[in-house]
Length: 185
Image 1 (cartoon, rainbow, N blue to C red):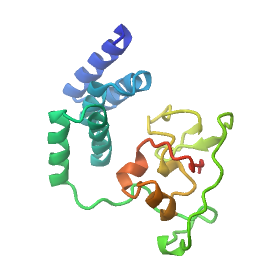
Image 2: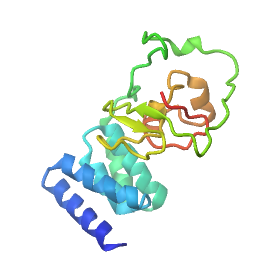
Image 3: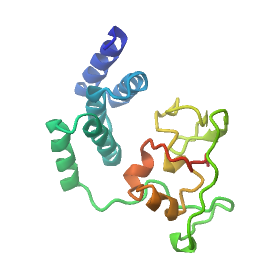
């Protein structure tokens, strides 16, 4: 671990323990941007988040790195006891008119679009804070939400692609994923 990452991780952990969650999130997300497999950064980030969905995503990332992390297992067990059934993080809205639509309107087999090319750079708006960004960014520069996730995809209202990608859980839709069908909304 580099000195820069270690210092950011230390400062982020101190910010969490002092209750400065916004500062902690910024510091820990910097660590994750430099080393996305940093188990400790994800664990501390779970403590910096207020939203249980964000906490769960961070803890699941810890377990993806180290399935034996007992603190992450304990945290997920605690969250499971606290949470009501999952609800969508973003209201389902029509892509063109902005009117609410029903998932039942999507019928028939899913026909996936062609994958975006590596050189395709598209401007979009962050699903969480409405900041302007580009599809090549990993996280929003303003709120640090993942850019490449279902909540930032124009196919968010359509459940068919999520079922095929095993992304039917609202928490998974808010997390970073590498769905080849993703298109900026």
